[in-house]
Image (cartoon, rainbow, N blue to C red; front, side, top):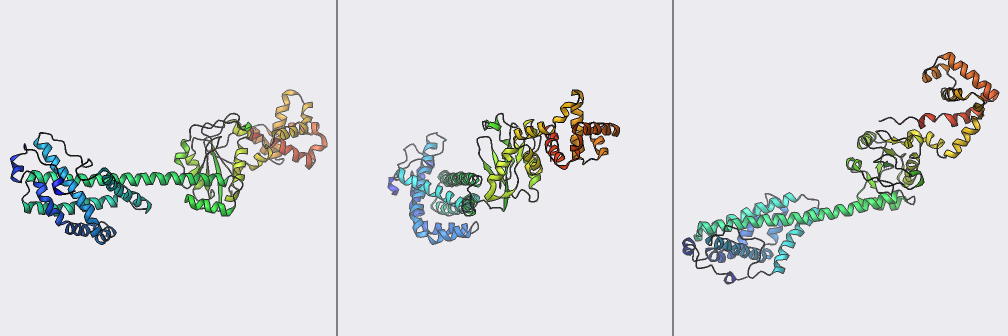
Amino acid sequence: MDVESIAPVPAAATATRARGGGAPLVALLPALLRGMPDMLQGVSHALASVEQEYADFLAGGCVEAVAPAQVALRRLVWHAEQALRNRADGDARPADVGGPEPGLGSDADGLIWALFEELGRDQWRRGRPVGTLLSAYQVGGRAAWRYMSGIAVDVGVPADALAALAEQVFALVDRLGTVTITGYVDEQSGSVRTRERFRQELAERLVSGRADRASVAAAAERAGWTLPGRAAVVLVLSHGVPDGLADGQADRPDDAAALTRLDPAWLVLRRDTGPAVIVPDPAGPGVRRRLAEALHGVPGVVGPAVPVERLAESLSLAEAALRLPAMDRGAGPGPFFVEEHLDALLVHQDRRLLEALRDRCLEPLEAAAPSSREPLRETLRSWLVHMGNQRAVAAELHIHPQTVRYRLGRLHELFGAELDEPGLRRRLFLALAWEDDEQARHQPV
């Protein structure tokens, strides 16, 4: 864009501007254009206070930077003249720094903004804060303005024209910052989406049951996830155990608020039956406490810790724990740690087998009076659990030791000498010892 291409100033311009030749900033433009290399050198020196790399980059490319800098300068002069013209006509609105002007096509204009948007994207990709770049714009803008205002004062540019030019300089700095931030945020958002996709793919691979160490390591590297030696799957049950889970027909919980409190090192696993997370090194310092805090008030099941290539086993056992009688009665305020209930999980794995065992082993109780069957049953269970310690049985059942002895005598009458045989006691223990699990909720951590 040549100087002559700037639109003429209307005849109604103020007397002050007339003393400057009608378009004082247009008259100033040739001097500014001639001094462009010196101005860029001054900006380069100023940038060293922010980031030496920026200063070196501009100093090394001053020749290439002259042409686009001249385009930007013509833009500033044109908009400043427009602002003066508006004010002369009684319009206090500033000229739009991003609007069109003669001699600069929309394609070229778009390229300028695209360049600074890409600077923002590059700043994110290089792991640098965008604030450093914005500071460089501010410092560079002030350095450029010191040079431009010095020439303008020497030439005798009127104060209103000088103010209009200053307004455009710093409006341009603000616009460049906005465009740069847009590029930075867009790149950041895209990177986050890509990272989350890789993390989801990794989580699915880990619980697939087909995850060899090499493929898991490659997927973990893509996801930026440090591969631990052991991990566990945690099922988050936002509304307790969903109805029909045992039949595989559970509705997905719509409240996954607990996930927002999770450690960022934990992988979120999306499942049809509800959200889950993969927790690395669950036995590590403080992990159990963080789990309890993250899932406070939101029931969850923590699968056993296993090598990462066997995480499908942790998921399978956590799902099996959902079918425990205690879980069917409603989960408690804290997570249910499967490792602490493996015995109950084993016993209750097949309820039909358990009921069949109970029916067979407890058949002698049918000969007792209906009103005494349940007291005899609970006494037998406590006696087996406490390995024959009658005092402990009395304390647990809150009955007199004499009552314990009476009931045990009655049990020996019903079961006969077989009650003293290890085989029957073993079967009775399996049938009865975990009945408390069917009536008591697990306690909070």
